[in-house]
Length: 307
Image 1: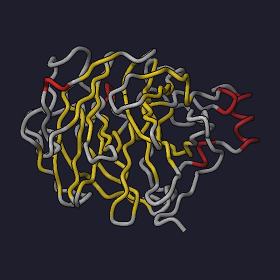
Image 2: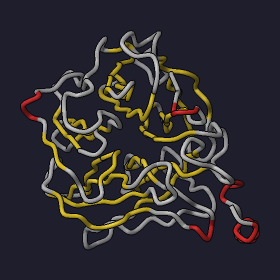
Image 3: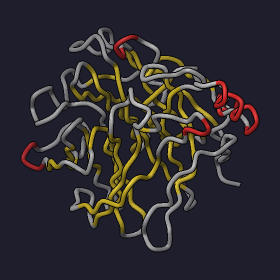
Image 4: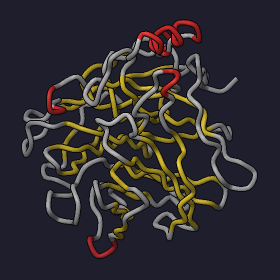
Protein backbone atom coordinates (compact mmCIF):
# COMPACT_ATOMS: atom_id res chain seq x y z
CA UNK A 1 0.00 0.00 0.00
CA UNK A 2 1.39 3.42 -0.96
CA UNK A 3 2.17 6.15 1.59
CA UNK A 4 -0.54 8.32 0.02
CA UNK A 5 -3.11 5.53 0.44
CA UNK A 6 -2.08 5.05 4.06
CA UNK A 7 -2.54 8.78 4.68
CA UNK A 8 -6.02 8.73 3.14
CA UNK A 9 -6.98 5.76 5.28
CA UNK A 10 -5.77 7.53 8.39
CA UNK A 11 -7.84 10.59 7.51
CA UNK A 12 -10.99 8.64 6.63
CA UNK A 13 -10.83 6.03 9.37
CA UNK A 14 -8.67 3.05 8.47
CA UNK A 15 -10.74 -0.08 7.87
CA UNK A 16 -8.08 -2.13 9.67
CA UNK A 17 -8.95 -0.31 12.89
CA UNK A 18 -12.64 -0.99 12.39
CA UNK A 19 -12.73 -4.75 12.10
CA UNK A 20 -15.28 -6.52 14.30
CA UNK A 21 -13.56 -7.44 17.57
CA UNK A 22 -12.89 -10.97 18.73
CA UNK A 23 -12.47 -12.49 15.28
CA UNK A 24 -9.26 -14.24 14.32
CA UNK A 25 -6.90 -11.93 12.46
CA UNK A 26 -6.86 -13.96 9.25
CA UNK A 27 -10.15 -15.55 8.24
CA UNK A 28 -11.90 -16.04 4.89
CA UNK A 29 -14.90 -17.66 3.17
CA UNK A 30 -17.56 -16.86 5.80
CA UNK A 31 -20.81 -18.72 6.43
CA UNK A 32 -23.43 -17.41 8.87
CA UNK A 33 -26.39 -18.86 10.72
CA UNK A 34 -28.54 -17.70 13.65
CA UNK A 35 -28.98 -20.19 16.52
CA UNK A 36 -29.46 -20.06 20.27
CA UNK A 37 -30.05 -16.31 20.09
CA UNK A 38 -26.67 -15.55 18.50
CA UNK A 39 -25.01 -15.24 15.12
CA UNK A 40 -22.65 -18.11 14.37
CA UNK A 41 -19.78 -17.70 11.92
CA UNK A 42 -17.93 -20.58 10.28
CA UNK A 43 -14.93 -19.42 8.19
CA UNK A 44 -11.79 -20.76 6.59
CA UNK A 45 -8.75 -20.31 8.85
CA UNK A 46 -6.40 -18.22 6.73
CA UNK A 47 -2.72 -17.32 6.80
CA UNK A 48 -1.49 -20.80 5.86
CA UNK A 49 0.80 -21.16 2.82
CA UNK A 50 -1.08 -22.84 0.00
CA UNK A 51 -4.34 -22.42 1.93
CA UNK A 52 -3.17 -25.35 4.04
CA UNK A 53 -5.58 -25.23 6.98
CA UNK A 54 -6.68 -28.62 8.34
CA UNK A 55 -9.56 -27.63 10.65
CA UNK A 56 -12.66 -25.48 11.04
CA UNK A 57 -13.57 -23.23 13.96
CA UNK A 58 -16.71 -21.32 14.95
CA UNK A 59 -17.31 -17.84 16.35
CA UNK A 60 -20.50 -16.42 17.88
CA UNK A 61 -21.82 -12.91 18.39
CA UNK A 62 -24.93 -11.13 19.68
CA UNK A 63 -24.60 -8.26 17.18
CA UNK A 64 -21.95 -8.93 14.45
CA UNK A 65 -19.54 -6.59 16.26
CA UNK A 66 -18.36 -8.39 19.41
CA UNK A 67 -17.32 -11.96 18.65
CA UNK A 68 -16.37 -14.93 20.82
CA UNK A 69 -14.08 -17.71 19.62
CA UNK A 70 -16.02 -20.95 20.19
CA UNK A 71 -13.09 -23.17 19.27
CA UNK A 72 -12.43 -25.90 16.78
CA UNK A 73 -15.46 -27.84 15.56
CA UNK A 74 -14.04 -30.22 12.94
CA UNK A 75 -10.54 -31.44 12.09
CA UNK A 76 -9.46 -33.22 8.93
CA UNK A 77 -7.49 -36.39 9.49
CA UNK A 78 -9.10 -36.84 12.91
CA UNK A 79 -12.84 -36.21 12.64
CA UNK A 80 -12.67 -36.75 8.89
CA UNK A 81 -10.99 -40.00 7.86
CA UNK A 82 -10.91 -39.49 4.09
CA UNK A 83 -9.02 -36.17 3.91
CA UNK A 84 -6.22 -34.51 5.88
CA UNK A 85 -5.64 -31.06 4.38
CA UNK A 86 -7.11 -28.05 2.58
CA UNK A 87 -10.04 -27.35 4.90
CA UNK A 88 -11.80 -24.59 2.99
CA UNK A 89 -15.04 -22.70 2.62
CA UNK A 90 -17.53 -24.21 5.08
CA UNK A 91 -21.30 -23.69 4.83
CA UNK A 92 -23.54 -24.09 7.87
CA UNK A 93 -27.22 -25.09 8.00
CA UNK A 94 -29.53 -25.46 11.00
CA UNK A 95 -32.63 -27.64 10.71
CA UNK A 96 -34.86 -28.74 13.62
CA UNK A 97 -32.09 -28.26 16.17
CA UNK A 98 -29.45 -30.14 14.15
CA UNK A 99 -26.47 -28.48 12.47
CA UNK A 100 -25.01 -29.52 9.14
CA UNK A 101 -21.53 -28.40 8.15
CA UNK A 102 -20.74 -28.65 4.44
CA UNK A 103 -17.09 -28.09 3.64
CA UNK A 104 -14.25 -28.47 1.16
CA UNK A 105 -11.41 -30.94 1.76
CA UNK A 106 -8.81 -31.85 -0.85
CA UNK A 107 -11.14 -30.64 -3.61
CA UNK A 108 -14.06 -32.75 -2.44
CA UNK A 109 -17.25 -31.60 -0.71
CA UNK A 110 -17.96 -33.19 2.68
CA UNK A 111 -20.75 -32.92 5.23
CA UNK A 112 -20.90 -33.50 8.99
CA UNK A 113 -23.80 -33.33 11.46
CA UNK A 114 -24.03 -32.16 15.08
CA UNK A 115 -26.69 -31.46 17.70
CA UNK A 116 -25.07 -28.16 18.77
CA UNK A 117 -23.37 -25.35 16.83
CA UNK A 118 -20.07 -26.14 18.53
CA UNK A 119 -20.27 -29.85 17.71
CA UNK A 120 -19.05 -32.46 18.03
CA UNK A 121 -19.70 -32.92 14.31
CA UNK A 122 -19.98 -36.46 12.97
CA UNK A 123 -18.77 -36.76 9.40
CA UNK A 124 -20.63 -38.68 6.71
CA UNK A 125 -17.54 -40.87 6.32
CA UNK A 126 -17.01 -40.15 2.62
CA UNK A 127 -17.30 -37.17 0.27
CA UNK A 128 -20.77 -35.93 -0.50
CA UNK A 129 -19.37 -34.70 -3.82
CA UNK A 130 -16.13 -36.41 -4.85
CA UNK A 131 -13.42 -34.79 -6.93
CA UNK A 132 -14.04 -35.52 -10.60
CA UNK A 133 -17.72 -36.39 -10.25
CA UNK A 134 -18.76 -33.22 -12.10
CA UNK A 135 -17.05 -30.70 -14.40
CA UNK A 136 -14.88 -28.06 -12.76
CA UNK A 137 -13.43 -28.24 -9.26
CA UNK A 138 -15.48 -29.50 -6.28
CA UNK A 139 -14.99 -26.65 -3.80
CA UNK A 140 -16.98 -23.87 -2.09
CA UNK A 141 -20.31 -25.39 -1.02
CA UNK A 142 -23.28 -23.25 -0.02
CA UNK A 143 -26.83 -24.13 1.00
CA UNK A 144 -30.22 -22.47 0.59
CA UNK A 145 -33.60 -23.54 2.01
CA UNK A 146 -36.60 -22.42 -0.02
CA UNK A 147 -39.99 -21.44 1.39
CA UNK A 148 -41.31 -24.97 0.72
CA UNK A 149 -38.65 -26.44 3.02
CA UNK A 150 -36.47 -27.95 0.27
CA UNK A 151 -32.76 -27.32 0.80
CA UNK A 152 -30.40 -26.92 -2.15
CA UNK A 153 -26.67 -27.51 -2.27
CA UNK A 154 -24.46 -25.41 -4.58
CA UNK A 155 -20.76 -25.80 -5.29
CA UNK A 156 -18.04 -25.45 -7.92
CA UNK A 157 -15.07 -23.61 -9.34
CA UNK A 158 -15.20 -22.72 -13.09
CA UNK A 159 -18.56 -24.53 -13.35
CA UNK A 160 -21.46 -24.01 -10.92
CA UNK A 161 -23.65 -26.90 -9.80
CA UNK A 162 -26.89 -27.03 -7.81
CA UNK A 163 -29.12 -29.84 -6.58
CA UNK A 164 -31.95 -30.33 -4.08
CA UNK A 165 -30.78 -32.34 -1.08
CA UNK A 166 -32.70 -35.34 0.16
CA UNK A 167 -34.58 -35.13 3.45
CA UNK A 168 -31.54 -36.35 5.39
CA UNK A 169 -29.62 -33.27 4.11
CA UNK A 170 -26.59 -35.52 3.58
CA UNK A 171 -27.39 -37.03 0.18
CA UNK A 172 -28.91 -36.18 -3.19
CA UNK A 173 -30.03 -37.72 -6.46
CA UNK A 174 -27.21 -37.26 -9.02
CA UNK A 175 -29.80 -37.19 -11.81
CA UNK A 176 -31.14 -33.90 -10.42
CA UNK A 177 -27.85 -31.95 -10.53
CA UNK A 178 -28.04 -28.81 -12.69
CA UNK A 179 -24.80 -27.28 -14.00
CA UNK A 180 -24.15 -23.90 -15.60
CA UNK A 181 -21.50 -21.19 -15.98
CA UNK A 182 -22.57 -17.71 -14.78
CA UNK A 183 -20.97 -14.62 -16.32
CA UNK A 184 -17.32 -14.42 -15.24
CA UNK A 185 -17.83 -17.30 -12.83
CA UNK A 186 -14.89 -18.34 -10.70
CA UNK A 187 -16.40 -19.87 -7.54
CA UNK A 188 -18.56 -19.46 -4.44
CA UNK A 189 -22.08 -19.60 -5.89
CA UNK A 190 -24.76 -18.80 -3.33
CA UNK A 191 -28.53 -18.33 -3.60
CA UNK A 192 -31.08 -16.43 -1.54
CA UNK A 193 -34.72 -15.48 -2.06
CA UNK A 194 -36.52 -12.19 -1.46
CA UNK A 195 -40.27 -12.32 -2.06
CA UNK A 196 -40.74 -14.15 -5.39
CA UNK A 197 -37.31 -13.38 -6.82
CA UNK A 198 -34.24 -15.60 -6.47
CA UNK A 199 -30.72 -14.19 -6.39
CA UNK A 200 -27.63 -16.08 -7.45
CA UNK A 201 -24.37 -14.40 -6.49
CA UNK A 202 -20.80 -15.57 -7.02
CA UNK A 203 -17.16 -14.53 -7.09
CA UNK A 204 -15.28 -13.69 -10.26
CA UNK A 205 -11.54 -13.37 -10.88
CA UNK A 206 -9.00 -14.98 -8.52
CA UNK A 207 -8.96 -14.60 -4.72
CA UNK A 208 -5.28 -13.63 -4.97
CA UNK A 209 -6.14 -10.67 -7.21
CA UNK A 210 -7.25 -7.22 -6.03
CA UNK A 211 -10.10 -7.45 -8.59
CA UNK A 212 -11.71 -10.46 -6.88
CA UNK A 213 -15.36 -9.39 -6.50
CA UNK A 214 -19.00 -10.47 -6.28
CA UNK A 215 -21.42 -10.52 -9.20
CA UNK A 216 -25.10 -11.46 -9.19
CA UNK A 217 -28.05 -12.57 -11.30
CA UNK A 218 -31.79 -12.91 -10.77
CA UNK A 219 -34.09 -15.81 -11.55
CA UNK A 220 -37.52 -17.31 -11.03
CA UNK A 221 -36.39 -20.48 -9.27
CA UNK A 222 -33.56 -21.81 -7.08
CA UNK A 223 -31.82 -23.42 -10.06
CA UNK A 224 -32.46 -20.65 -12.56
CA UNK A 225 -32.56 -19.75 -15.34
CA UNK A 226 -30.55 -16.66 -14.42
CA UNK A 227 -30.31 -13.12 -15.79
CA UNK A 228 -27.01 -11.38 -15.07
CA UNK A 229 -27.39 -8.06 -13.22
CA UNK A 230 -23.77 -6.99 -12.87
CA UNK A 231 -21.31 -6.39 -10.05
CA UNK A 232 -22.61 -6.37 -6.47
CA UNK A 233 -19.44 -5.81 -4.42
CA UNK A 234 -15.96 -4.77 -5.50
CA UNK A 235 -12.74 -3.12 -4.41
CA UNK A 236 -12.39 0.51 -3.30
CA UNK A 237 -8.75 1.29 -3.97
CA UNK A 238 -9.00 4.80 -2.50
CA UNK A 239 -9.80 3.22 0.86
CA UNK A 240 -7.35 0.34 0.48
CA UNK A 241 -10.18 -2.21 0.22
CA UNK A 242 -9.21 -4.99 -2.18
CA UNK A 243 -10.36 -8.46 -3.24
CA UNK A 244 -13.88 -8.33 -1.79
CA UNK A 245 -15.37 -11.75 -2.44
CA UNK A 246 -16.44 -15.21 -1.35
CA UNK A 247 -19.53 -14.01 0.47
CA UNK A 248 -22.58 -15.34 2.24
CA UNK A 249 -26.05 -13.80 2.60
CA UNK A 250 -28.24 -13.96 5.72
CA UNK A 251 -31.66 -12.52 6.52
CA UNK A 252 -31.90 -11.40 10.13
CA UNK A 253 -34.76 -13.63 11.41
CA UNK A 254 -38.02 -11.82 12.02
CA UNK A 255 -37.01 -8.82 9.90
CA UNK A 256 -36.44 -7.82 6.30
CA UNK A 257 -32.87 -6.79 7.10
CA UNK A 258 -30.17 -8.66 5.18
CA UNK A 259 -26.46 -9.13 5.86
CA UNK A 260 -23.69 -9.88 3.38
CA UNK A 261 -20.48 -11.26 4.89
CA UNK A 262 -17.35 -11.51 2.78
CA UNK A 263 -13.59 -11.45 2.95
CA UNK A 264 -11.06 -8.95 1.64
CA UNK A 265 -7.30 -8.59 1.75
CA UNK A 266 -6.41 -7.88 5.37
CA UNK A 267 -5.60 -4.20 5.94
CA UNK A 268 -2.80 -3.30 5.83
CA UNK A 269 -0.64 -5.44 3.54
CA UNK A 270 -2.90 -8.47 3.16
CA UNK A 271 -2.98 -10.78 0.18
CA UNK A 272 -4.68 -13.93 -1.10
CA UNK A 273 -3.79 -15.94 2.00
CA UNK A 274 -3.99 -13.12 4.55
CA UNK A 275 -7.64 -12.08 4.48
CA UNK A 276 -10.19 -10.73 6.95
CA UNK A 277 -13.98 -10.99 7.23
CA UNK A 278 -16.33 -8.02 7.07
CA UNK A 279 -20.10 -7.52 7.30
CA UNK A 280 -22.33 -5.07 5.45
CA UNK A 281 -26.02 -4.49 4.78
CA UNK A 282 -27.52 -5.99 1.65
CA UNK A 283 -30.36 -3.86 0.26
CA UNK A 284 -33.09 -5.11 -2.09
CA UNK A 285 -34.42 -2.32 -4.28
CA UNK A 286 -38.15 -1.91 -4.98
CA UNK A 287 -37.48 -2.83 -8.64
CA UNK A 288 -36.08 -6.20 -7.54
CA UNK A 289 -32.41 -5.48 -8.14
CA UNK A 290 -29.77 -5.31 -5.41
CA UNK A 291 -28.16 -2.08 -4.30
CA UNK A 292 -24.38 -2.27 -4.95
CA UNK A 293 -22.67 -2.81 -1.61
CA UNK A 294 -20.54 0.03 -0.28
CA UNK A 295 -18.29 -1.18 2.56
CA UNK A 296 -19.21 0.60 5.79
CA UNK A 297 -16.61 2.78 7.49
CA UNK A 298 -17.45 1.35 10.91
CA UNK A 299 -18.67 -2.17 11.71
CA UNK A 300 -22.40 -2.57 11.25
CA UNK A 301 -24.29 -3.60 14.36
CA UNK A 302 -27.30 -5.90 14.09
CA UNK A 303 -28.39 -6.99 17.59
CA UNK A 304 -30.14 -10.32 17.85
CA UNK A 305 -32.90 -10.67 18.79
CA UNK A 306 -33.76 -7.44 16.90
CA UNK A 307 -34.71 -4.52 19.16
